[in-house]
Length: 95
Image 1 (spheres, rainbow, N blue to C red):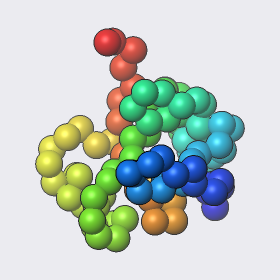
Image 2 (image 1 turned 135 degrees about the vertical axis):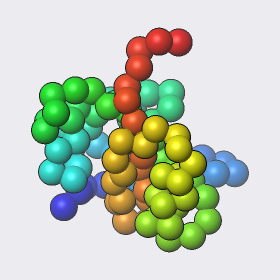
Image 3 (image 1 turned 60 degrees about the vertical axis):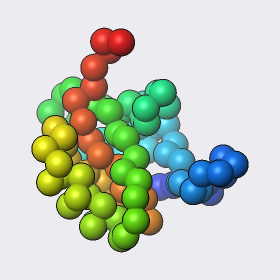
Image 4 (image 1 turned 180 degrees about the vertical axis):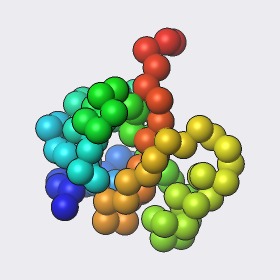
């Protein structure tokens, strides 16, 4: 089971669960650190760094994941944590 902390609300934005560094999600993604776009994580199964980005929108988390996957946006995987959905994407260090 994934671990989350109480969300810290940002004025005007929906509260979202924060991830904790070191947490293992979905039995394979080890959370590393916060980035400008989401969270950097290490895929222990494939030995690579990935980017976990929140999937916002209306509907249940699984519905948001389905919509995100249908856009052809390069979604590698997705993790659902409570009411939050996270897209797993290739991590790029390019700016």
